[in-house]
Image 1 (cartoon, rainbow, N blue to C red):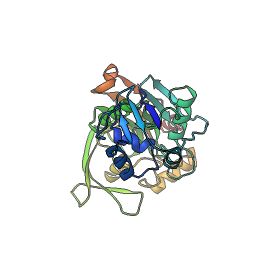
Image 2: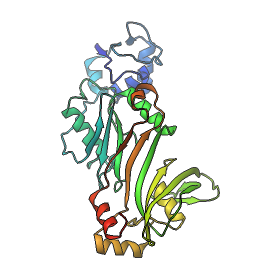
Image 3: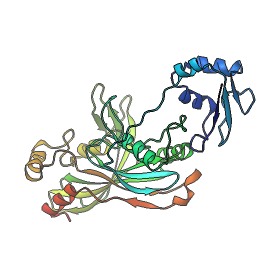
Image 4: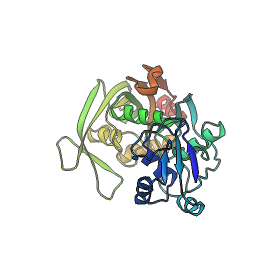
Amino acid sequence: MRQITISPIEANQRLDKFLMKYLSKCPKSFIYRAIRTKKIKYNSKKPQGNEILKESDLINIFFTEEQFEEFTVQKKIEKVAISFKTVYEDDNILIVDKPMGLLTQKDTSTGHSLADEVLSYLMENKSYDPVISKGFTPAPCNRLDRNTAGIVLVGKNLMATQSLSQMLKTKQISKYYMSIVLGMITSPIILKGYHFKQEGKNEVSISNHFVEGAKPVETRILPLKTNGRYTLVEVQLVTGKTHQIRAHLSQIGHPIIGDPKYGDALENKYFKDRYDLKYQILCAYKIKFELCTGPFSYLQNRVFTVPAPPAYSKICKGESLL
């Protein structure tokens, strides 16, 4: 028998969901059968499985040691070098500045990602202990492309993670990007369209008209300075689909400079030759907590910004966009 005491960062999730994480190699059917046959008890009672866990709740699992060995996996988190910068941190949230070239989440079983760095960092400052907290693992709540720098939000406990994810989904947190685009833009633009991911490709297209399987998207563009050939812009991402900003700007004839997928090849060559720019100029430089719910009321109307990477400043100076 094993008794589990629910920690603060594991609370606020369903009992059955917690058990599936704790007994990660155990079939779901086996877990539900154990609940029905009282081999799993919740606060000394037979549970239904849909109970919402609270801090200090007790779960008793009447399995053999052989079954525990078969059904559980010991989390192994390696210490890795930290390349992100901490923007803000408290007991609920970690806001980081992700550098260019770093994946938010690993795309293979090997490699290195921001998620790995976050776990290593939180273990180091004792905000997270994988031995104690088997039912919750901190992870980024929003994603950036590998070569897009900027702000990423991380929930440090389950309630915070759920609240952040919901606020991002319902647009209660506004996200702003900085970019340099081809062409002259002199007034704000609100772009609406339909986003479609091309099958078998890591590429999307945006249409002015609905096509089967497409999702509506909205992108808002605010010009900051133009030299007549290029424009420094602030982009507000209203919806958040894959490559949305890059594809939307390309669709209206103002592709992001340096973008190898949606950009202009001749312009990209100019910036590669002059500035050694290999990827798109796009930085998630600002977020605003517009409407805070749950544990984040204290962040209401707070704004967090990060500086643009040095390469951006060099290009802005060289192209008279400062």
